Image (cartoon, rainbow, N blue to C red):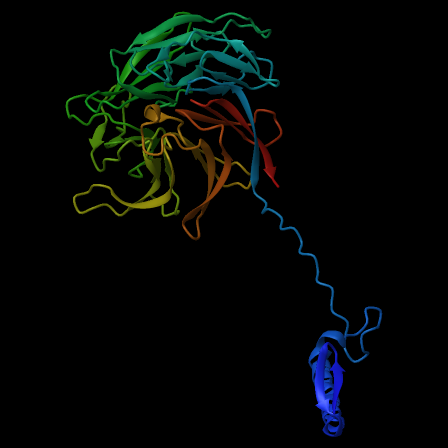
Length: 441
């Protein structure tokens, strides 16, 4: 006889006699499978309830500390103020309205401190695509009336001009009267520097030319109601390398007299009659596109003058270590790279920027030199300060600004707001800017 046994949804037909035994076997199999499944599921279901405290012999997990925000290292910092935007690349600093506050002149305008409000000064013509007719400007009391005037030259114009200060503390919205100082009869002028060659307290205008066949000449100004100008020939034409891109001043040979350094070597100052006697040319080097000024500094304290210079139209900032003279008596130099990460360090200054008693190198990128056609010519404008370590004989870099202000042909250092910290004035093709020194923070 058949009986039906159900196990879940399964129906099993078994014999009555044998069926009882089979049913018992199916029941035992079902129980065994259930136990196995329960054991397998144990790790998933046999967990400590959420509210049950951790066993006493297991320490509670430690709370991870919140990482602290990393502070930026302290360094010298600057705030940037744009005074004007044009292509002018020259600037000067001095008290032009005799009110006791320093002022800025830069191309067509002057900016009177302490507010540095803009006022007209002179008409300045454009030159080529992105130049203006100003390759350097300087403050000199040309007519000896107690008021600083502006002396300036240009790239392709042979004349030096002076712009007469109106002589009033209250500014005037009018151009200063322009006078021709001298016709130098020389063009291809890279830059002008004002440097006191004879120690009389009045700087001579030294003209640096990229035309190496030009003579190296300075112009001595004798101030007065009818100012006089005389020519000082440092290096006469004729050698083919009498001038060249870049200029600086310093005692190269350690004789206690200041020499002139330039692209194609250096001019040794004569012991007597330096303003009327040509200087001796030593063609000891040729440094392409050396900037203006080059700096003469004894960096390693060995008693010999070293030279800092930048490639004004390429990447490269260097210092030249002066070593013992060569067998033929010529000066002997070893080149050291300071930085090759930015291009066109065309001008520089050497000043104590942080008040520690040691001077720093201040320089930056000349914006769009050669209209941006130089290597790196279209990269960001940048201004930098390098601190010298006399023990490691290395410079360390502080990029104080990037993006707006660069440098042109002149950078000026002066404490414009009388807070005890020197500020930076830079004029270039991205505009004229003041970089206000905010100290180390």
